[in-house]
Length: 316
Image: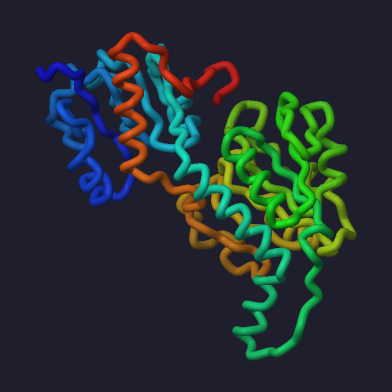
């Protein structure tokens, strides 16, 4: 066995990308693939995982640290027989930048009436539409972790009025923030709602009919817009589709869903005021993921504390 402890890879990513990244990753360390059902994983001490096989922990009983393949960890916390070992979130500039780019793109798309103009293009219809300025809209960001705070910063650069909400109050210079007891006040101010929440028992299904009804009506866009790139379990798709159909919401940009892949019979596909992306807002850079994991493994083996460890009580 090599001097460095072995690592098992169990990522439901594009295999070619994983193999290409592994060509230069984890030097001097034995790399094991959980996708090989006959491979002995009993000596693995680390696992880099995204939606892993349910029997991983049986095959690899000596794991010391789990590394999530993305920012979310609910796919790990919900696993049966989860061992009592540290879970490390993937925090990287590339992941953060990709997410905030997507959030800004979606806010600008609805600000500048992109869905309506695309409809007109398909219909060969030439007509200028009313387009407010960014400063006329309040974007409310729910979830003020690393991804949320970077999105807030970039939205402010674009000129939007930005407010933020998190379970416990966060302090962000130049941004008014709200906590769990002030959700209704936050929603009443919001024209574009951005969901970047982790999935926890408190946030599961939080984006429902009751919440959508509390968003500000009659703002610069007329009706509020919902944008979600957090976790699919945080939204109630039936309530969301109904709110869009009834005009409670004027539009949406959705990257996550209760069921993924999005079923072919989902009403979202045919809604002209909805932008759908396939859970790609912040796709993990596999090379960056492996670099982060290796750095954390070296810290662990040197007796240093791990970084970005998940608090299982809060779920993030």
